[in-house]
Amino acid sequence: ILNVEQSPQSLHVQEGDSTNFTCSFPSSNFYALHWYRWETAKSPEALFVMTLNGDEKKKGRISATLNTKEGYSYLYIKGSQPEDSATYLCASLWDMGRRALTFGSGTRLQVQP
Amino acid sequence: GAGVSQTPSNKVTEKGKYVELRCDPISGHTALYWYRQSLGQGPEFLIYFQGTGAADDSGLPNDRFFAVRPEGSVSTLKIQRTERGDSAVYLCASSLGTGGFGGYTFGSGTRLTVV
Image (cartoon, rainbow over all chains, first blue to last red; front, top):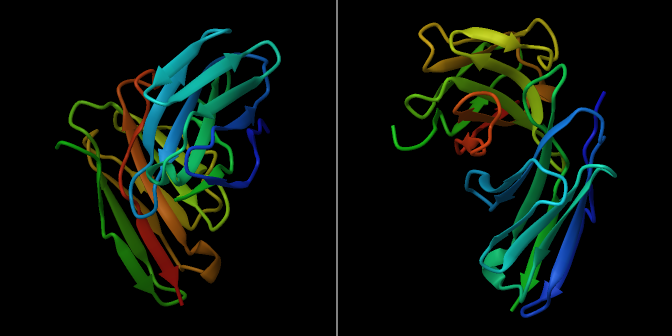
């Protein structure tokens, strides 16, 4: 069984703080790594899809990096805002067996105003 | 449609009853996925379709669960003899192809409660 692990499970920060989360995954036969934001009562929304070792993606104040050789990805949020409060999910796809994403348990971020 | 639509949004059923959950994916998306999310967990894979066929159903927990996608668009997840442990949010997603390079587009989910 291929597992995706995320840490921390939850995080409380103050508005304006910068923060980061970790996603780790088996590096063998790696195909793609996705990050999603899931706000309460809404659908999970795709943030980034990364495939290449060393990939860095950015969307506004949020960015992500990928290390496929060691099997980890970091998500960074610069200057957190209350609207960033959500669960951040990462998911990986491997070029073998199941061709559907395997998700981690998520990091629940709460940004206090 | 413009997004992935799931109906109903909420379903309360009695233990032992049969339920059907519907997913209407984005038009033209050939890949469709069902996931289940229990409290405190990430989405757990159930089944994925490529076109009309179930390409991987290895995540279905037992033979009470079944899903179809007869015309390659709308999919129905069917659960027989529901149990309290089936209570969860059932998420459907679709993508262009199975590489998911554009990401999956998710519906809002069906919250199933078995009492």
